[in-house]
Image 1 (cartoon, rainbow, N blue to C red):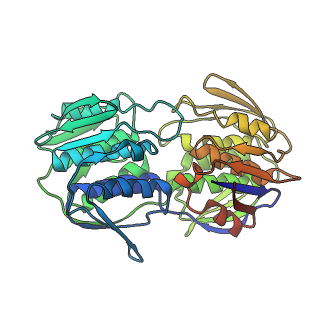
Image 2 (cartoon, helix red, strand yellow):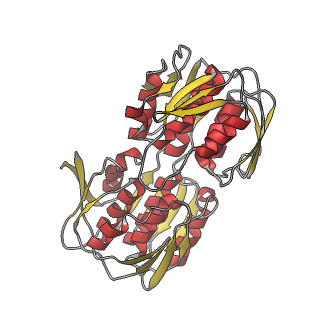
Image 3 (cartoon, rainbow, N blue to C red):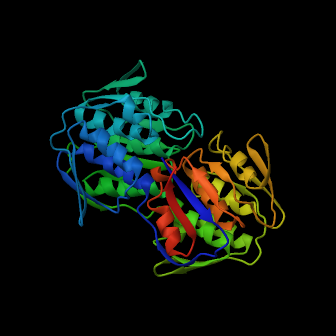
Length: 418
């Protein structure tokens, strides 16, 4: 098992290229199940979660080939619709296979998913929507069993906006009979990116990017070539890291329109952010001002950047309140930040962060994907020693070569065997 070590104190300087978005790549790969041809996907990051979904789909008969032209996904010989527990338990996004399998094969057997321990994140919204479209579903021994001769278009209302729920039902609906209307749909850029991929396959979708999405089902789809969007969470992580270290970095591939809430908050902290042709030019302030944040579905402040921003507020001037409204267990990184000297008090879904002049190196344990990143950022500003971050297999689920990219910006950071 690997660990990451950091000697803090170096401001980040230079240029960094953002990888393709994990949360856009996973549904794009799953969507290839809808049509038995060879698809080409570009910008797919080399992440543990991507390897997991490939392994699951390979067991169903899909074939993958990586090359300079991108990732080729051949689902022409699909023979099975089962996603086993041993693989699904490590990645919640495997539930995205349910919709396309049911639409194409008329059957699916998917283990209830796992992933980061940041909240219950139930799949009941997915299942309720599929039942309204004519699916016969039941749960047995930890598996979802689903059947449908052909799904029927239906009105679907999500009680809360759900990204994977919106994506799953959107994929199921593209081959359904008639029109499906998704109300209170997720508006995240990753949803629109999937809609673009599906339209490239011949799907008829309108309204993505709003809370109402219309899908008119078609009989058949065809192969597509699609490039996924850059990862806005990775971009946001580098934006926060640059501000935190007082650095000067051009973040190539960063799309400001995908991170408007983060841009505004970092400007309030004192950072300078200027859109450039390549992406975003970020300059960190000499002194960080404390600001409050509240996580919200897009276009609000993303929950996936809350832990990183908390690390920033730990070294800001003054006190800030961070309110988490998306996941109920997303403060489990706080105890590790406190080991590094951060002053944080939790009251329900709020955290009071009292900024201090600096943090101290310490051995810490990553508890989930984004918590891992927050500890890396804290290590970048911790002085007089080495911060050791263990259990970084969480980090490898969502960041491609993160320590290498930080090294390219001048950070003293490296990976070792634990």
